[in-house]
Length: 229
Ligand code: ADP
Ligand code: 5GP
Image 1 (tube, rainbow, N blue to C red):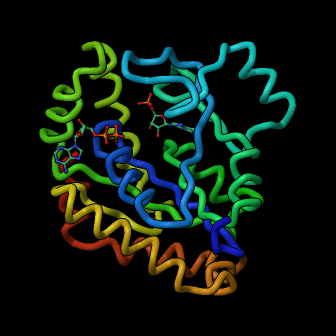
Image 2: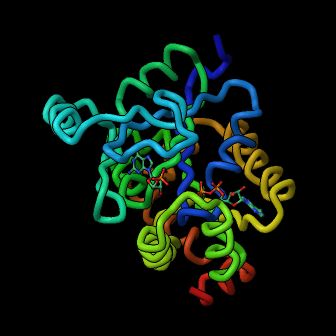
Image 3: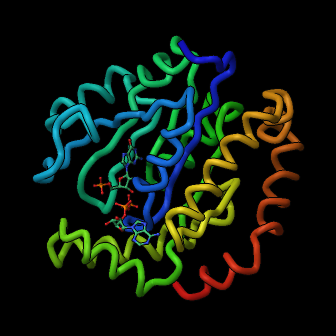
């Protein structure tokens, strides 16, 4: 059993190849954290086993889950495959008393932040240090076809444009050790705040003020990277 009586949902988004999975692993090194395993209609990659990174389902099964209201959020990513977060993951986090870590795209992030659980959410956007480094990492990973790489790079631009409005924090993944410490620091800082304080920033007038503050608070170093895309 964990110690979190009011669990937080930490959303980690960012372009493919920016290092989300790498930094999510850093968060999971902290006690009282749990990874949200999504369902997807994507084919498993060679190194992926079912139930570890994803639960792989057919398009028919996915549609059935939508009908049953099984998803906290879902989206079609890269205009191709479907991905969704089952409500059950949140129920499990609550039962266990741990924070839930969602590695999801910008559409899903928006839905969760505007939905029933908005008071429980903290969102983090991971940025690569430059477009060139992003492309290098995607290629070095060696997991995607040329078509898929092109699609992911195009999507990166779209996602980065959506960034300022919706995310509470922006982490530049230049060096893994440094960015890992920064992201762990965000989790610890948010845990130290009260749930009431977070709620006030998520609803009503407080939410509008907080969104304005987020936009004006984006650090210069992050703004410079945004301009590169
Ligand atoms: P994402 O989950 O966002 O698609 P990954 O975490 O899979 O990204 O990282 C993409 C690739 O870049 C992986 O091969 C990973 O090992 C590498 N990588 C991640 N962070 C860094 C970093 N700070 N410097 C260099 N390479 C990195
Ligand atoms: P990949 O195919 O590389 O594993 O993931 C592609 C994209 O889908 C990533 O941006 C990832 O964050 C996103 N993704 C993974 N799971 C979910 C999910 O449950 N919901 C949403 N909306 N996006 C997801």
